[in-house]
Image (tube, rainbow, N blue to C red; front, side, top):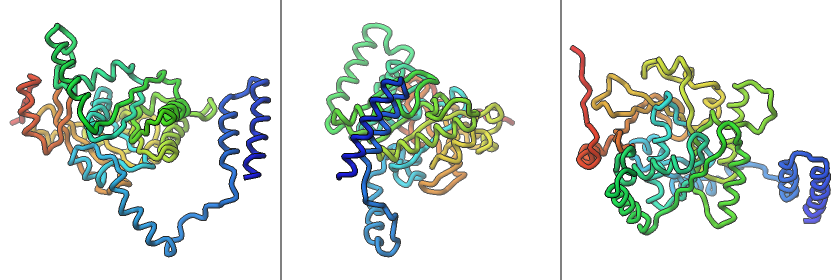
Length: 349
């Protein structure tokens, strides 16, 4: 305790010098945090046999702290859901449904009591919230704000959901495109926690629009790799799963679904090396039954194995709502309300 007090005093003195010298203010935070962490206790890691009971009990109970997507087919690949201390990445072409994916996950998770934090570098807070309006109301995203009847109907539907018991909350925070780093997100998360709000899962839209905390002048590969590492470190710091997005490169944009793999991740293989779970989106023409299907191929999975296997969502193009492949009957039924088409794929020959 004595050493900690002395370290804090030293950090405060150094902070004054940083301020007077117009230095990097982030160094003040780091200095104070390091001082608060001074301790004579040393973590010797895991003792395999000595800690056997404790370790197994911890592993057996991890299913209780995973955050499911509540899409049964995908959760099976995730061994029940996204666990803390992990980074998962969903990848597709431009306009391939990435942002809609995390919007749909969030829309299901919040009604199971989870606090969802969604940080966007691509859209404004209101623009992203419109996706939730449409998904939750099953109303056409292009018409739900048009006309008095639509506005009243939308408000009534969302108001009823607001009053549901045991729901969590969705926090949407926008950051400047290309100028926000993990440190900006860290500050925001601490503000939530200081107000008694415990995040359960963190979504970031998306990796390639973030700025690394490392010094400028580095190449694109190193920068994107560093951002991925910083995001994964954030999951350790706040003990929550982090889910983010990325894009296919030019070659991947024109490749067939069967050809897509690690080589087609935009800008950096560093994301592939860092992430715990990676899915690439597209359409497998050989498996396509309906035109509005989105296929996901598991290309990396530390969470449950089964790399190379595929799952699918059924997409309602008007409301942006995704359905699990076990929910096809509900998807077809909801078309009566959304007025979206359910066209089967035409086969050649």
